[in-house]
Length: 112
Image (cartoon, rainbow, N blue to C red):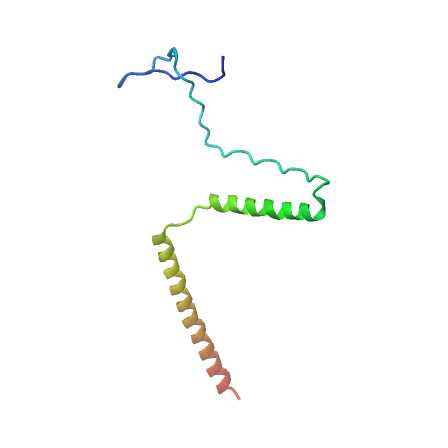
């Protein structure tokens, strides 16, 4: 007998009885945890120096692609709003620093 429990038959609005239904298929347990990463393979002597470096580059590429798939990218509206905030802050800081620069140049020009 397998370690998985068969499904339990319930009626509409009825509480589960906890009894196994004959002939029902087992439902695998669902886990919220991500799968474990695979262990890297040891390079064989047939690969040589070039094959090992190419394999490392290939592994790095696949790891990068896997990590980018995990990224929670913002939607278009959020991206637009945050871009506008960055542009506005840049303009305000540019005006502020330009004003400070102008005042300091005026002060140093007046001092002999």
